[in-house]
Each structure stands twice: as C-alpha cells, then as structure tokens.
Amino acid sequence: MKAVLLSSVLRVILVLVVCFAVSVLPCSAQEVVKMSTTTSLLDNGLLDALLPVFKASTGIEVHAIARGTGAAILDGRDGNADLIFVHARELEEQFIADGYGLKRCPIMYNDFVLVGPQQDPAAINGLNDIVAAFCKLASSPATFVSRGDESGTHFLEKKLWKEANTQMPAAGYLSVGQGMARTLLVAFEKQAYTLVDRATFLNLNQGDDETSHLVIHCEGDKKMHNIYTLIAVNPKMHPHVNLAAAEKFITWIKSAPALKIITEFKVANTSVFFPIKED
Image (cartoon, rainbow, N blue to C red):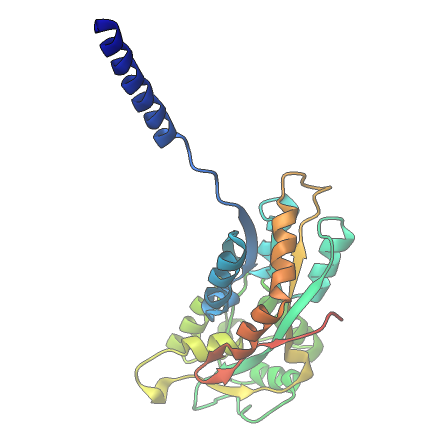
C-alpha cells in the first residue's frame, strides 16, 4: 500500500516538474526584420499604416529605425539593418555599386515642396521652377532652414543650390541637423522657408493660429519628384542579415493589398503617395 502511495506521489511530482519546465521554457522568438528608413515615412504616418498589416499577414515584426537617408545607408553598410527604405537615387546606386545592397526596388513616389511664411519675403509664391526660387531666396532677406543631416531631403537641397549657382547668406541659413518634423517646426518658429516632402508638411504644419501657418510657395517642378526605394542588404558583406525576411517585406509591399494601402493613404484628405513600377 505504501509502495503504491509512494509511486502515486512520485508520479504527481514528476508531472508537476514537467509542467513547470514547460512553463519556463522560452517562447519561440518572433521573426524580426530591421529596416533603416527616412524620418519622413514615420513623420507622415505611412509606416504606421503599413507595418501592422505586414505583421498580421506574415508574422514578421518590422523594427523601423528612423534616420536621414545618408544615415540609413550607413546602417546598411555597417550591417545594422536588413534593408533600407530611402530616397536618393545617386546614393542608392553607389551603395549597390560598392557591394552593400542587392537591388533597387522603387516602391512609390511623392513630391517635395518649398514652403515658407505667408508674408513671402522672397516673393517666390506661385513659382514652379525650383532653381529660380532658390535664386530668389539667396538674394532676399529671408531665412532658410536646412535639415543639414545628409538625408535625401538635404541631398536634394544641396543639388538645387549647386544648380542655382548660389547659396543663402550665412545670416539667412540655419542648419539644424535634425529630421523633417523638427526642421519644419523650426521653420514655423522662425517663419522661414524650408524644403519638405508634401506628406510630412500636410501632416505636421504647425500652430493653432492659421495666420502663422507656413504655406506652399513652389511646387510642381520635376526636380522635386521624390522616389522611395527599398534595398536589401547584401549578405555577402554581412552574413548575419535576415535576407529572407527582407525579401518577404519587399515582395509584400509590391502586392495588391499593400499598394492599396499606399494609394488610399491620405493626409489632410489629400493623396500623397503613388505606387510606381520599377524603373
């Protein structure tokens, strides 16, 4: 009888030990893809619309790191990201030529606009020639706020100053070394001009008093066309990168459900992103 009782007790203890062991076993790690991307895609809210749907569809969590395009590309070079989502073609092509990226996958486009105070001290309102607008800015008493962070926006700005063969006087040029949201806020506070993507501008135009809102002064120039591109990091350079997950994200974002999200995404009741075919 005692032997039977002891055996029963031992069985109970064994079951309890097994149950405890199962309860403390770590859960299987969720698959993660690290994406270094531009601050604008976070500032304007598009990634908030896309990433939860991708996770629900695939089970893969996207950890998005918001940086300027230059810093995002550096993340790819250093192996700190599995893929990058950026918007500066020349830098992207160099990234691939140097062996760090596999292929440019253009996903969508929006456009840049030149915004500034309603009083428009540079008298550029209505221009659709961005180089002419930069020339007028340089000869005006206005202030221009630059991101100054080697982002895609900053890269374009520097190209435009070069094409205009001029630059803002030092007293009228403020480089903040910040993302688009902060740059736009400084431009609002200073009642200054800045170059910004349309989606971020519509999402973050500052201030309760509409008379102090910044407004779009120059738009529509083809030079302000802004293509966003995904590039997977080359595992030959960084064997630890999660290429499979990166490629799943690239494939998914070109799928009909993802393109529908991009097409229907609006800021201030305005469509701001448009899917494109690979060029």
